[in-house]
Image 1 (cartoon, rainbow, N blue to C red):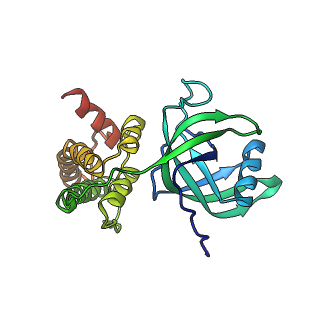
Image 2 (cartoon, rainbow, N blue to C red):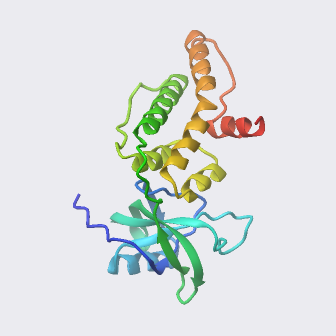
Image 3 (tube, rainbow, N blue to C red):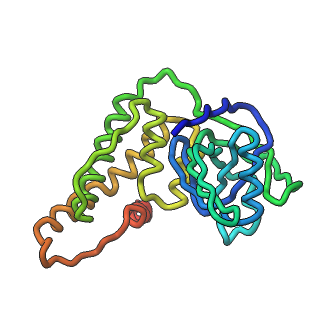
Length: 238
């Protein structure tokens, strides 16, 4: 598959928006199925231009559109698969975060003036912290695979601390509140420290469950709380 170049993003610009009940991180892959007429039009316009649109978390309880203060992430269209009746399957990837400045409603789909931003630069060596987060993450994933009776496999993780923080944040089964918190942070160190704290709060419980599961695999029955639920419980006990 030939992947077109991703354009450089900086400053502010008008961006088509696709509000969804999910949080997209830079570097994460996101498949989408497009069937509504307004989003068919949006994707056509995106393909005719720079293949970019924004994903902003949409909470059905908040109404339409999402609050302008909410941080979102630009998605880049990597590939399209045309279907019947003009529907499309897309493969996209998160590119860069943005803050919505104001909404523009001149087309059938929502647009916004957004301002792109990156993490604050730092000269601090974050490799040791990144290694600690990686170790905790791999321990949690291994325990999860044992509990779910999956083959033990380890995905490759980025070496760059910023890319690592987004990769782990996008992979973990976190609550929306946690995901939005991690997306909004503008410090790699702060994001890694938050991930470290989250993982420290649950890795022991996961490894204990994995050990019990191994012993009682044939007849054991136990609670199977998700990582998001364990993190919520950990927050409440602080």
